[in-house]
Length: 322
Length: 185
Image (cartoon, rainbow over all chains, first blue to last red; front, side, top):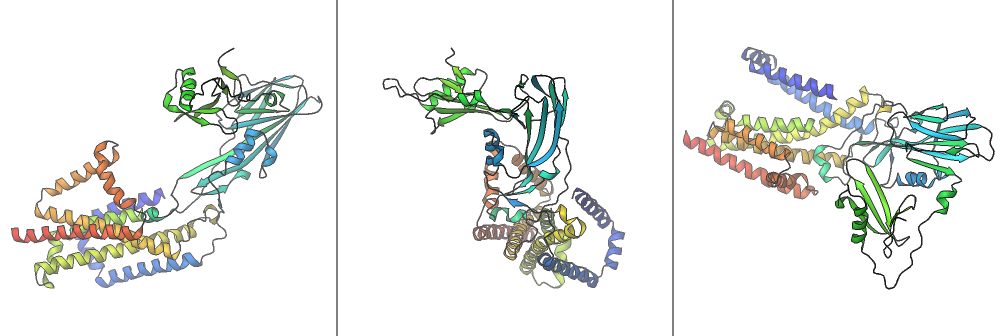
């Protein structure tokens, strides 16, 4: 498209140069008589009308199919990952399987290239067979535009894994090129259409499932992995938010006070970056912090009576400190 | 892109229509100044109408060229086929936008004919407006509101009324200036 634009600009400039020269203009006038101009115009109009007819009769079944998705389309996938219920996801694509014989009891992770969206699930085998099996899955690797997406999951490449000593080195999947053409609504009617015209976006998830021997310890000291869920996960299952006991004489704090309390625990943040309200399921105030532009965030639960603050993902109490 | 270029063409061509060279063309067939101005306006309307239709149908031609020249598997099917009602809507809205710019160009063209200083002032004014548009200061709020008056209108009927009234006002102002040029001479 950019080549067409370049040629059209160059063509326009050449035309301007040509018409600014009187001799050339006179020659063009002699060459292009009124009849010829009329013929060219008529031919152009016929081509335009013919192209409209063609548009309606040409077969379009070979075009890349795109599916419609709802605004919360990706939520079910991210929720399934967060809950560790991979069984819920039907359209998983198995990319690659790695198998290693190991003689250590502690597995660590290291990330060798920038990779923001990696999730690892660890499943314990019932016996100590000295083997680690790793399976890479991809799902809904897709190109998004307006309310439609094109699925490229089968083309997604697996990450690169290397097991050195007792550390698993992870490198991001290599990129791949996709050439696609799409047609936008005309600029002049965008304002009358119900659907907003939006740009192209990309989405997709990659999950590694590690099958480890029964007694293998998993450590992520460098915090390189977004999420590790071990199966079974006694630590996570035991922990939960303590139930709220309504203390009659104690004054219930407001959500604004809860926000101010959480904000006071983190001196480098701005109060405006915090938001929150009552969590209906637990009765706690759920306060979240998002750092716009950087993409980081966190959330906490605040007990409205005791003012205790808990980290949302681990339920660890951070205020008041023991 | 096609629509954008057509808008530029309509704007430049309507300025050129007011120039002395083109004004003299109709002297052999038009009896007086008023009919000359009216014929120019009618010609401008016709040009904008043809420009709007061809620019709209040109986008269909681009689709057909893409269909022929590209691998079908590399084309996303959505929006390839424009429904007939949408095509009519594109033709109408494009024509109205082109007419809006054409009538604005007609006013500028007559201003330039009235006083040659506008040859410099008009581009400077436009450049200043574009600079204010790109800045996010409070000065651009009026201009932004003016642009939104047309571009954020979601009803085609109201847009039709708005753009036609504006075009008529601009053309009447241009015609008034054109008659003043005659008095000056």
